[in-house]
Length: 272
Image 1 (cartoon, helix red, strand yellow):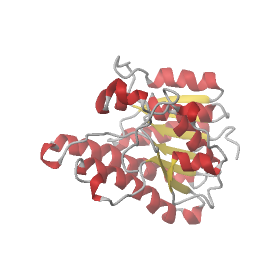
Image 2: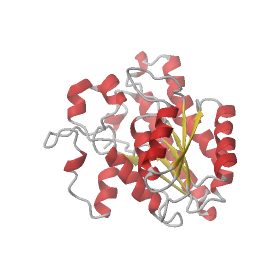
Image 3: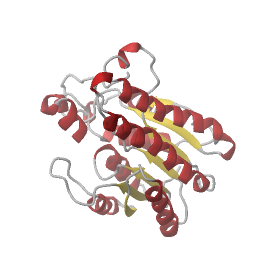
Image 4: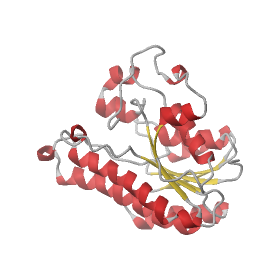
């Protein structure tokens, strides 16, 4: 499936995994809509919607930067309206924006809980809701949520219950929409990495430089997303994919090029 002139909205695309997916699809000629909050650069995180848009265009696509906090439906609708106004429709939605807080229940403050639910669950749901009328008219339309397989092993609940259920909710949104939208030929899937990915979240919140060296680059998620979104929306739907498995199905088994430090021991991500 060609991505030439396909229109892709990506939440949280000013940096990290979201930006990497945008760059991968822009290189195939896609129109990328960067729906993120950052309009001024944070030195700890780097990147804004405008710098990301410039990179998408340099990669070969067209880009539209729209400031958006997905906690607010008027901002979500603004993204959708501006996308349709500029590019004429929507073919793909990638729900990448996410909040993380790995605390046990007693240490999970209401504002932290609400932030994860407002972004991970409500924001993802409302983003899908706003895009669905246009995805129904799209070409090989896909929704892809960056969320894990639903693994009910209690070890994934005991240390960070609120985060776990918020990410599983994102996957349930994908699974539910795969059934709801099948008759419209709109696919919905989830994608998650086998290992930690070298992003600002890993560096700043999880394990610092040591964990970064035990991680893979964002390119493995970008390539995996590319292959998923290339598949026919009529048949490739209702899956919770792991990046390694997606690449293996494409005959790609040597993943050394994705390691931040070639040959280093890799650290498994949560939920796998």
